[in-house]
Length: 321
Image (cartoon, helix red, strand yellow):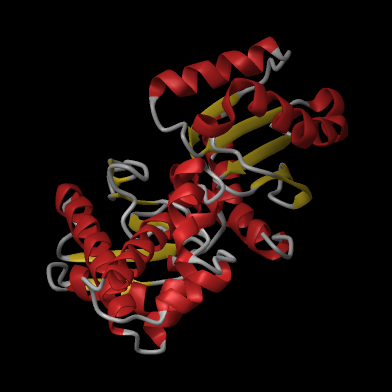
């Protein structure tokens, strides 16, 4: 194929990149939330019209291989629905639909064996061994899991605040920090704000960095929240490594708005995982998920990636990607 388009749609931002045959990034577009479970078919149509049409105008009649890597699209039923949506919009070229985590894994290790732990709004652990076998843990969403994600940390911080206000828990600097972040002059307004929806999932998830910052300053309650979250993520890393036969040696990339910053959360994850994986190597991701999606698009078109293409992707990666 002359062109490849990779789309990485997460809970907050979506990025679409256009890459030529040699692997040179020629254009990039950004948009809002790309989580299929949240925006639905109508929202996805609008998002793709905004992002893809300018890119498709550049490829003209040459055609392109496309990979949509979207949060909330990790199951075959959703992937089939999205592929059908594209056909209805007139797409006739090569198309592949994957989860955003799959593209992140491909980019992080440039297609080689390895593991990723992602913690942004939510969380998931995904891995691939030398035989190409894939395994995952987590990714169950805010009600069932998402350990270490921003929502997980923020919700537990709010629970800690409630316990202190009740006199049933220890004092914590989170009370003052969260009151300022939520503009909560009077905590009696917390219940109507949470259950009425003005403090929604996004606002709770945005509290995650405040929790890790309080932990860095030595707040005991915040430290406990972060330590437990990192330990739970580490357990998931071990579970994936065990099923992939990677307990003797594994390469791990920590990704996402919460975990990708390193700090105490990543350190807690590493301790929990290293207790069971003999040689655990933490490394930065080689390429972002949008370029991982490009690699998946090439694979869907029956083309290899190759060292030259990888070098071009690295050299022409746009700022901010």
